[in-house]
Length: 136
Image 1: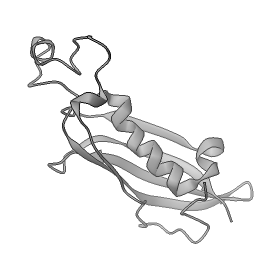
Image 2: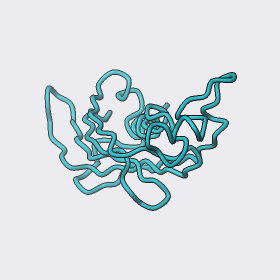
Image 3: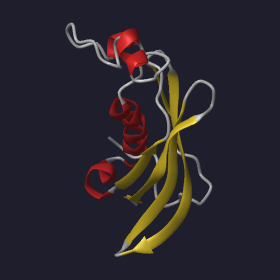
């Protein structure tokens, strides 16, 4: 996959957004009744209803980083994420990011970003940082 970002990237540039509309069916596994698939199980844990599996929601960020940095995402990216709140299983979510630093290191251009996932109410449900290099 070819990267969207290159050495012309600048502080303040936005990463390409990735979105997904989750459905209960995305989380169902056989007849398991978990907080991800069952109303009663979710309520027993103090939740209003079934919630999406966190790593599946975070995968939106990883897809965005793969599109942004291409092959460098696999070989040279680090990412630190904080899960701030659960996401309902029927939520529409958008991953976004913004470049916060660009600098040379070991003959490469390194890019640091703030990254996040917002739910349908524009609440940041996952926040974090990512660091990668860009190809010339």
